[in-house]
Amino acid sequence: MTDDVLIVHGGTPLQGQIRVRGAKNLVSKAMVAALLGESPSRLFDVPRIRDVEVVRGLLEIHGVKVSDGVEDGELVMDPTNVESASTDEINVHAGSSRIPILLCGPLLHRLGHAFIPDLGGCHIGPRPIDFHIKALREFGAVVDKTPEGMHLSAPNGLHGAKLELPYPSVGATEQVLLTAVRAEGVTELRNAAIEPEIIDLICVLQKMGAIITVHTDRVIEIQGVPRLYGYEHKPIPDRIEAASWAAAALATRGEIEVVGARQADMMTFLNVFRSIGGELKITDDRVARAGVTGAEGGIKFWHPGGELKAVALETDVHPGFMTDWQQPLVVALTQAHGISIMHETVYEQRLGYTEALNQMGATIQVYRDCLGGTPCRFGRRNFMHSAVIAGPSKLHAADLIIPDLRAGFAHLIAALAAEGTSRVYGVNLINRGYEGFEAKLAALGAHVERP
Image: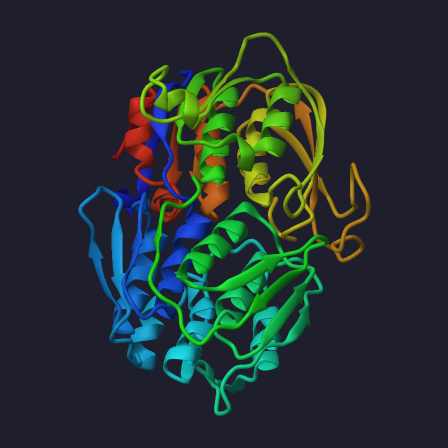
């Protein structure tokens, strides 16, 4: 389809300034949290991305009135008249997002029942919902499996539970938080995810009236309350998008200032960026408000010239190196001198995009073994989850087909770094998580066009 193709004339360093808004992985969950309130909620700095549209649609078919606020990027959500949605209406969104699973707790509290269609999302591994279903059952939910999905009910209400996750899953932690805040009694969650987006969701829920304590050693305690109210919240900036543009600056030998990027959420990435040989300058909001650089802080990333250095990395849950950072960074590592290693420990099928990079001239070999670190849960299970990158490699243009969101942006970076003209197919998928990426590319001097 010609409307889903981007022609990229590569070989030009990206230079300029762009801005990131609220984190995709928080905004959508904060929108779901609005279902729990008895009064309207107001969310600021919301990016115009496909995932927000999907959640907005899900809220609206359940009776939530969603409207744009006065400010650009402001959403107002009024859950006063929450109602049931038909299976057909919900199925319209099936395959578009994995968010429907997170509506279960709030809908069980508000309506006494919920429905989960077949779930979509990026194809980077099975990402089973077993954690979610088990947790909901522990709270007292009854789950009936049908050919079209799962119907849930709570005939005796939801009650606090003691839970321990076998893996600190972000989605399962979100599920427990969104369910426990209005469950009767106390919930204790062990081995919880503690990503910045999780902490920000806890901030949202606390604003609504929730009582949540984050203990040491990944233990979260939630004291259920009978009612919650609306919130006003500005989410943390999107650290994945910020890192993606940083990798683009490195791969194209350019300089990009990412306004809105926040140091505290990106410290692990910033250390790696410097280790490779990239340079960065951080301007925090306090300095920005003092009038030194304008109204908002950010981080400037650039390639200082000279050789980039190879590194050995492995992805991990926070505070480790984020799995969504690895694909864009691997493109930059194809330009580093020596042998780099990327050991993916979060998703088992997340290195498939390297095949396209090899077609462009990169030298990347993937392995089943755990390379460069301690053995992980994917070892000896026949998953290609470690990559060895030899560089530097001169990338040349190619026709690319985007497989998923983060790999898609990595392919786009590769096309921008390569000599010649590439055609990137399936590019609209990038709109799921990168707001206005074509306009941002234009602002950075990239030569891209639609056919």
